Image (tube, rainbow, N blue to C red; front, side):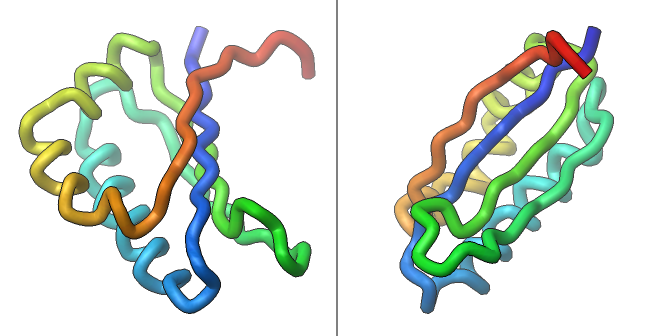
Length: 97
């Protein structure tokens, strides 16, 4: 059974394009990793929403995800951008459809 990443991004409105660029860097890397299935970035349409962007991604397993994000390559790629946009990742499994 695959695992779902839900990752909400919090940032000032004027930093939206930078937050999207940060997501694109991470998404491009993840697409090349074993076990990656898909990712989609969602933009809030609710004025003043706490989380302007939400990423929903799917991997074959939590282990695949952990291997990708704990790699030195991923850390080097994303570390400089971390302070731009606090984000709140969590891994989930689908229990109902």
